[in-house]
Image (cartoon, rainbow, N blue to C red):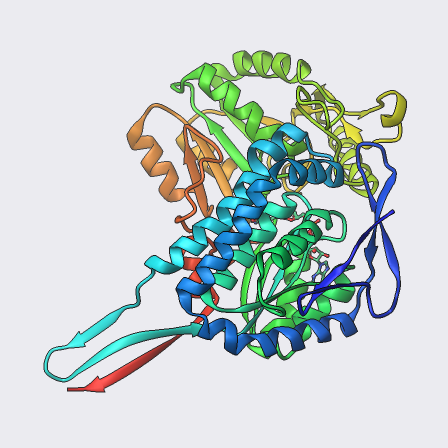
Amino acid sequence: MEQVLNYINGTLLPAVGGGWLDDHAPATGAVHAHIADSDERDVELAVQAATKALPAWKALGTQGRSDLIMRVADLMERDLEALAKAESIDNGKPIALARRMDIPRAISNFRFFAGAVLHWNSDAHLMDDVAINYTDRQPVGVAGCISPWNLPLYLFTWKIAPALAAGCCVVAKPSEITPYTAFLLSRLCIEAGLPPGVLNIVHGLGPKVGAAITAHPGVPAISFTGGTRTGAEIARVAAPMFKKLSLELGGKNPVVIFDDCDFEEMLTSVLRSSFTNQGQICLCSSRILVQRGIYERFKQAFVERVKAMRVGDPADPTTDLGAVVSEAHMTKVLGHIALAREEGGTVLCGGERVLLDGPLRNGWYIAPTVIEGLGPECRTNQDEIFGPVVTLQPFTDDAEALALANSTSYGLASVLWTSNVKRAHRMARDLHSGIVWVNCWLVRDLRTPFGGMKQSGVGREGGHEALRFFTEAKNVCIRL
Ligand code: NAD
């Protein structure tokens, strides 16, 4: 059985404690690899290696670092197919999605930040004849990067790439549920000649490895993407240590559909924003708000299209929805559907586990589910479900749409469908969310600020925001 080893000081190693965790393939439920079950001793080794590597990595300069990061990206591109297969097996996502989105985006993350750092400039503030101020930005030191299971390599590299480009050395932890492509990345880093200790990847459980990275005094910055509850725990530990924190957390995203939208374009997009990756993308829209004039038409057309979606083998390129990530997650999502029924919701389609045949019979599949008849206060419309489950709610006018859209404790991403430009601007301004897409979804420019408000997080990643996060600004004032 394949072993997912730690990558510490340039070497692939088992955990100090010698223990292993199971890595499951959601499509079949079977164990497909064993993961190093690390703890604070492995994190200590990783922090020591990163601290030791820091001066030489900084001294390499932006061009030298950029070249090495580009080299890793080139190797990822060479291995795109193998990485996509591994991601699909480890996560349960359709291979077509891993090929089209996850791995190309992971490669872009490396290339983007390797380029961005070369084009970055610092500020200067001139005080007439008095003085010149300039902003010096030095890497923050050893950065801790902790990522979730839904877009494993995509989100892992979204943190590591800017940290490395900015001159930090990194101690990173992928999700223990989907560690495999991070392990493959560590092999590529060795092949690319990344100096030992520059990137360290420690595998294992969140409360052991993630907590040890968060609490380590030698790690002054933590970039975390995951659940809101975990984010709160990380903030509780890190805040009194005055660490820099970037927290990208949960969501309960609305899509607001006005009756003046391009109906067909909207319909196709809302199917994607609801069910891509089995609804397990933090940016997926889980609350569909529809203006009354087109509510019935939308409902009928949407449910018809959802019923036609194929739940199946992630390895089959024609599959629309693969497996959800784990048995525990499947049970949680099915529990939310049961709760929706208890709350008085009507399940228009889906609503149950899908049992496939043959080797897939023990896999974790859920039918795409559409629920209506529930108001904004019920838990179904408040709690993050993070699966292939959406609700429909009608609204009358802009004010009601806005009130419904803003009625949760989250504020990550919203989508608007309208052909009225003034309304789009007004709504975009007043929505409580870090990202607003108008007449589109998941169009991503890596230069833009990315993140959420309210319980969806603190701070922004992306472009210069990420490079700023991984550096400390120092004002240097020179008297003229
Ligand atoms: P999670 O919070 O359970 O785990 C995320 C990571 O944190 C994992 O690597 C885990 O091992 C680690 N972890 C767990 N406990 C820890 C602790 N005490 N200290 C430090 N690290 C710890 O989240 P998940 O279930 O892997 O991912 C799903 C969640 O992620 C959803 O809520 C989703 O909305 C969110 N998410 C947010 C974004 C975003 O950009 N805002 C993107 C993707 C996913």
